[in-house]
Length: 192
Ligand code: HEM
Image (cartoon, rainbow, N blue to C red):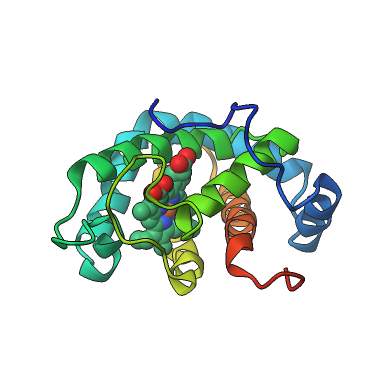
């Protein structure tokens, strides 16, 4: 898949160590039960992945202030190829997040994704001439749509309401953890 580097050995080492990440997990009550719930969620989400991405892309497409980040810097037109390449990696990300082992390689790829949203790395992967930077405020704001929209999809499996709630909470924590790692480049040195 173009630009998908989760297993690349040449990634920069994450500035967040596994020990620091363990403390972050502890801080938001993320534990083995969440890992288990995410694995269960993957089975339910995988067959619906196209519909999930349709929902998220529908939301971005309906919001010019968000579609802007996928647009050509000069013409202002949305770049369809950019959108579609990112969509493929986004699909893969759902599968990766629900099956992660949170090791050094995983942390390193989170740092790569962080840089891809920030001016230090945006546009390079797909070699596009788009706007240079995604503003920090939207990184945090996206936690809400990326979590709330997943609930109906989790409900489409055969899980009990209690299991759906556990999967939803685990997904919410995993997305929050990801966004914490992804905003590292936005934070002044020494403040993270
Ligand atoms: C890239 C998810 C916030 C626009 C990506 C990728 C994923 C993702 C999985 C592909 C990573 C890869 O290359 O393997 C998310 C999640 C967010 C978030 C979960 C917050 C919860 C945002 C926001 C925007 C945005 C707020 C602005 C509308 C983009 C763009 C790329 C991208 C333009 C391509 C960057 C590049 O490599 O040039 N995002 N994203 N994302 N996302 Fe996000």
